[in-house]
Image 1: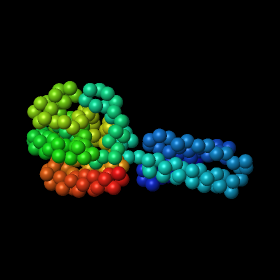
Image 2: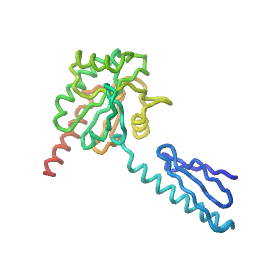
Image 3: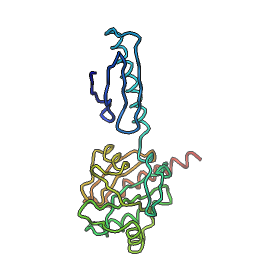
Image 4: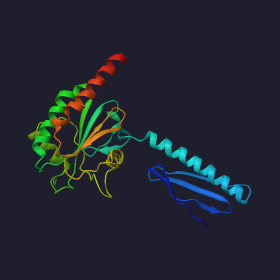
Length: 234
């Protein structure tokens, strides 16, 4: 048996091609596998090569279709109450996704400014989506219930707070894996901010050293364009 490893668009890969009695088996990784098996009627070299070409064509089309469908809003996450939530409910809105922490030097400034964003733009199809994370300096040690209660009591937060997750490393949440892959920017500390458009695509990303006030004009412009678009569709 011979094996051939190739890459597909840098996103998915052909895990293996195996030749056994002229048959070709393959599947696409890493997400939902696309598996196929094609067997030629002859074991002649030209027949096997034709089978390989057909297999590669099918694989490429499958990978293209999968890459085209993937966006932030296709994922499901758990909220602070332990319930599974589909992010598709935010499709059609602009979102700012943030990995938050309660005991960080950036906590007070960010929470106050994030809540102001939610207050000002929330009525116009905008949402701050907060994901607690304890990976950086262990500055989010509390339980989901404790975190939710703290930020709502201290900062008057009205935007969604989800269950505590890992945002980097092997155990990273799939939604965050997508954010990192799409933006090519990985969180290195608390309060990384990812701006998501109405289709679930990453527009930009900023670290904690960039304040919410600095990116507010960018968000305001996206929300303004969304309001105009919706009025035109009426």
